[in-house]
Length: 512
Image 1 (cartoon, rainbow, N blue to C red):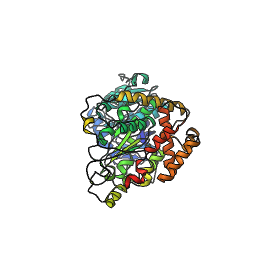
Image 2: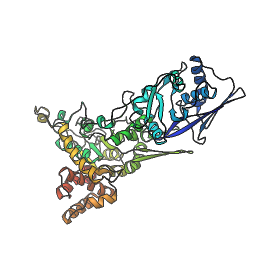
Image 3: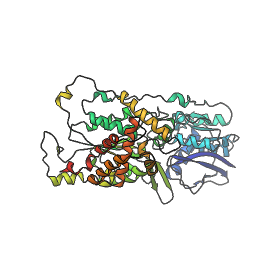
Image 4: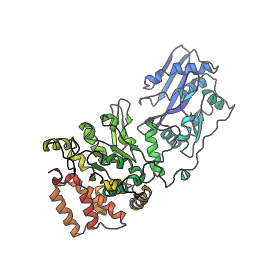
């Protein structure tokens, strides 16, 4: 007897419906076809043990399981439950009347209990798109899938619940979620606050501009100047995720298995801070079974690279293309997957091996050649893609002991939100552009118009600093953000001048 059940596979951050065809006929062997990996080939042992543990009969006949479409490689143990239900239906132990209405997925334990799976959110989105009535999956993943409205989500803990449901003995409890409108607030909760930072007003200003326009930023200064402390407080002034951004971010963390079971939908922007020993694949994604890397896990959030020169040169260079295109394509012989990678890069580094080059009080022990060699670990093309270069200087003693409370993150964040609101309205018709840093060249030419004095100012800076065409665009984008923060429709000379002075590492005098 031939029976079809339906499951789902995730490729990249998108899901594909998989038809699980089970045929029980005369014979004695078990076959599973359709490009299964080892985890799926081993499913027979788990399925048989689970079926026997609940007192059902495992057919002692020829069983053929086909995972269609057969030309797509299937991976993981999430097909166990769909295969088991198919076998029971093909052997007339389950009524097959409702099988075509539901996506079924879950890993089976030997006692019939159901283990969690990855990618519940993109699977639920695809199930709704394909017209399924509902989705049956492990109860731990149910809240995540229930974010998608318009489809019934049933969380189960044991295979017996599914059998009783299809035999119409019991009803499964539907998992429901409050509307998305009630999920999001305008507040961002974090223990780190800019009010804790003494002095460093110019650095706070630079981080505020970076947050307002989504710009990349690098902090360079001696040890103990506060680079890491300031960078870790950046999320406290970033705007909250919109519902669309939250769905996209949650999908990435769901397929990578990083989503907490207590968290059905991510509502705060990710902050990723990988160690400098990270490999190329771990950063950009990939592997024999492609998975999102740190740049994709930081999508719609912040990627913080501390001690930037300590990263391998090859690791840093592979970021160049994603920083420009805001996505990463992983190609394999049989398939290609795309992961979004629209993140804010925040980097921190010392100016030299000893850390005290350009220090106002301490003497640098490195020779000029050692300083040049250290700084050259960061290539020119990578620096070109960083909008703001900020030199961080040590905090004076009188500022450290000042009892007056500094400006709170919430106050700064309100200004950032006002600038972001202007940008959202400006790019309302664009799906892929939400802030100034994401502007294409077409929009730079359209929105960053300079008067004659502004052109002269930028021309002098370009010639004196020997800037590239990419750096030219970056300066204009930052100037546009500063103008937005001042609620100005046009870029004025003061906005342009401030944007130019945030290119510290382009200044030849800085290295002399």
